[in-house]
Length: 171
Image 1 (cartoon, one colour):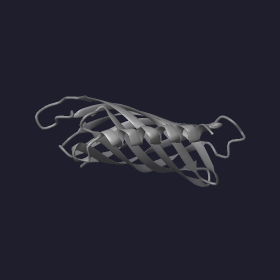
Image 2 (cartoon, one colour):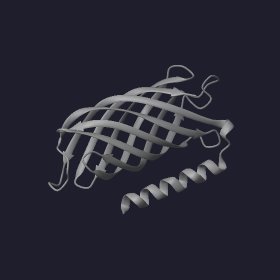
Image 3 (cartoon, helix red, strand yellow):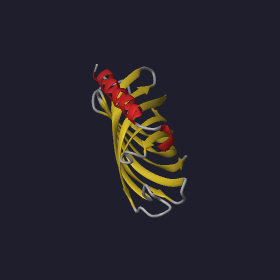
């Protein structure tokens, strides 16, 4: 029930943001990443095995020129726990602070960011979770950057900590 409320709230915000933004002035990012995942099981009723594994994924982000500090993102990642391969899908509201503005990088060259939203972890069964992430991104070119972040997935009876890094493509 909590996950349904979170999903509804995020989708409502997404629709409101789309209704006030002009597509011609939008910034879209595609992020590809790889990292490490650590699963901690807090409750034996959780249907997950604890442990460490690699994580790989991608994220699509949307930013409007009118509000360059507020965006939305859709993230898909995969990691392994025990014998199960898990797939995580999440929708997030993202708050970023652009730094290092110049003539070439009018929206900033360096960003710190926070994101929060609902997630679904699909394996043997589907588990709802809440995802929180924070990180930093550095643009090395006008359309390419590198980022590093920490992500926490908090579900019923388990926590997943992920440390990831990757490349961001802006278009």
